[in-house]
Length: 229
Image (cartoon, rainbow, N blue to C red; front, side, top):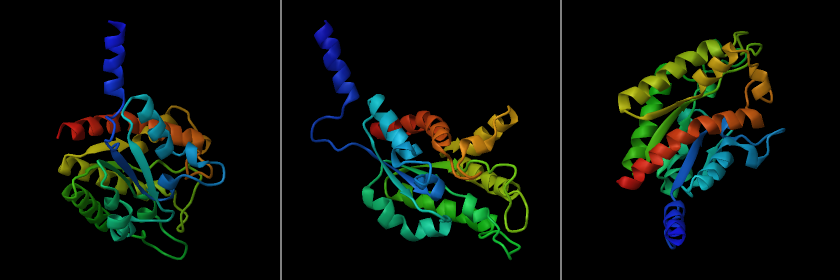
């Protein structure tokens, strides 16, 4: 009986020999890239997710396709090469911080919220057409003492892009991971966002753990659904 249970566990936990593990691509900006001063490659949410998936028996490969400073238009420009070439089962898409930011000497965000939304729709449509399942994610909050080029707290503009991201997820019937809401709730409960970041914007190892833990159940659900198709 014990031998039978052991065989059943192994068959569930590990992919069959010769079968390639499912690929998950994390597409985003420097927050997705993660690695920077104070954050090692194995401390990013992508690396943490791959390790967590392994312990859960999913055995998926997570490809980190984050690029610092990128916006949704940049993601569209490199989608085929950086994402679709991997034939991903699931693509985690997270943008908004750079799209919404106002640079010094400018009066408007780098991309309008309308353009941002249109680009998100193009991204998720392209991923679905290629056979992958897109999962939209909102960006984490900035610390309250940060400023953009107009002297505003960047969250004031970012929230509009968060709302657009959530709306696209609803319209397209996509899974959503709302990091912004999670960080906002934690902040309201007394957490200092700077304690989860290296600089008031980019997550530190603690911030990446928070993100990975929020993503994991959604990702497991998405992978399970893909395996049934």
